[in-house]
Length: 279
Ligand SMILES: N[C@@H](CCC[C@H](N)C(=O)O)C(=O)O
Image 1 (cartoon, protein in one colour):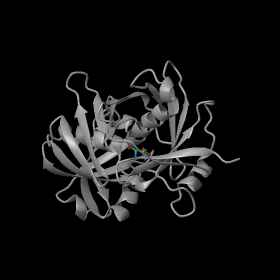
Image 2: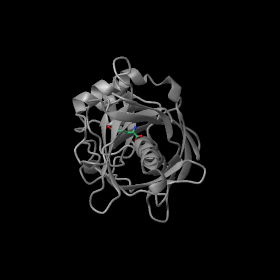
Image 3: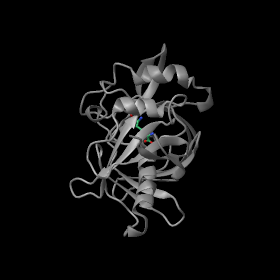
Image 4: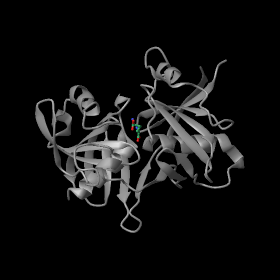
């Protein structure tokens, strides 16, 4: 039986959204998600996102399969798209402008802003090696500017978890990084037992950073919301940027803040509906 879906994107990081509100079990399997995400033989997307019923006092649950069928804990661009999708599904019955969403990374709260964007309370960054997880430092230590050998080069990396794992490297010229070849080597490096999302960053100034990303389970994408949040945290930890910055990605820009008041990360950016269909 054909299943209805809606395609959304957040800065070109694109997702197939499925209304799964009647059950806590996703209506398609990870294997089907791989087929759906295929850009030649399927619909084409970086992942499939399910809007499921809420759990533990939340409004909804989000689950996501990457385009390789693996299941990450969180997705920043995806949760903005989910908020826009839920607004569409609820229609005139909608009573508020924010949603408390249960995810594998904890409760995340996207809020619709007056200018049509979505501002997301992404929660607290996790910095200990055991929380990433990585073997690059003792379990209860932070991984800040630590050397890592990849492809016969020593990279100085900083690791941050936003529920999902990120490895950040600051470089002079982000356009010169051969992402297609070194991305997979970072992702599958033995120092990262649950694989890793990999970000390369060029500092333009303390409030403007350029980023390219190789995502775990999806490869090169045009944007990564959790990645942008992790990058800001890594920039602050290495004294390269302030606690509020614009992160420019190939698909557009995100505004990220690491609040001094509650220590939480706030991400603001767009979510665009592309089309709807049945598959
Ligand atoms: N593009 C996403 C992150 C999606 C999950 C990631 N590939 C992982 O496996 O952790 C974002 O916008 O955060």
